[in-house]
Amino acid sequence: MRRLVAVVVSACLMLAPLVAAAQVNSLPSQPHLLVRGKGEREVMPDRFMLSVRLEQTDASPELARSRVQADAATVLGLLKANNALADSVEASSLSIEPSSRYVDGRQVFEGTQVSRRLSATFSRLEQVRAVLGGLKTSDHLQVSGVTPSYSEETRVRGELKREAVAQTRETAGKLADAYGVRLGGLYTISEVAPDFAYGIQAGSWGDGPRDGSSVPPPPPPPPAFDVPEPRASDKVQAESLEAGSLTLTEYVYAIFLIAP
Image (cartoon, rainbow, N blue to C red; front, side, top):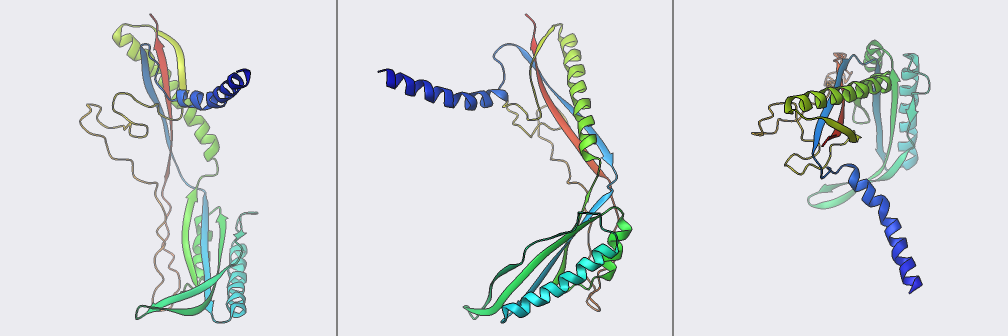
């Protein structure tokens, strides 16, 4: 009997963290106010990561490998010559696998495909343009994309969280005054929306009309860089690359109890 009790107690202890985690985003049974704070800021990117994919297919694995390595040496030299940020240059391991295609419904072996990915981050867009201007793209060398970022993003997001927290306090106070009630203690505060019992799910709390008639569409994705296709005449990457702003957003959800 004692052993059975011990097993039950042990099982309850194992379930306790799961129950506690589930309660983090649940709503209290007593009267409460649920508010959301939002911090948002537009910043100009100051980091630009350029990604390149190298690929060769040949009946001779060694020949395909040597061609990829030669292309990699050329690209790496171009990245470093244009002052890629220290320790930002990355080269993946070689990927080697068989390659085949279908001819008249039949799979035909083409050879061994060897591929590798290279990337580097630059502090100025002009440096990225210079690299693109020096690349000759083809079936064997392709620009995967240019990803913008902001070097102070961590610091800014911390500031935005504090702004969102302050906004929850202010909103809760105004709501309590409007309804003639007093705020009690803070029940929970989280970056994840609670599991709403009255129709709105986490992630769908929009900034548009709040009459319940419709859920506004999600915000547009952050602006990206459109790297144009190489010209058919010379396969040289065009240099029409422009930077747009990035929008950083932080949300905080807080539940305040209403004092009796």
